[in-house]
Length: 63
Image (tube, rainbow, N blue to C red; front, top):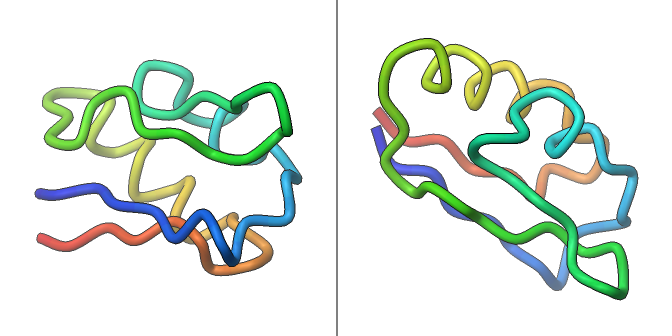
């Protein structure tokens, strides 16, 4: 699994950071940043969920 984001699309909703805080964070402007691009264990499941919950589609999860 590989996690990427498109920061230009991010609206700063924060669902990713709330859902998978080990994988995502938000910068000072509220935009998503990736902390772990190749999560393992439970973080993988949470990263997938964050991708589904992202309202702007900025979070990309590729298996």
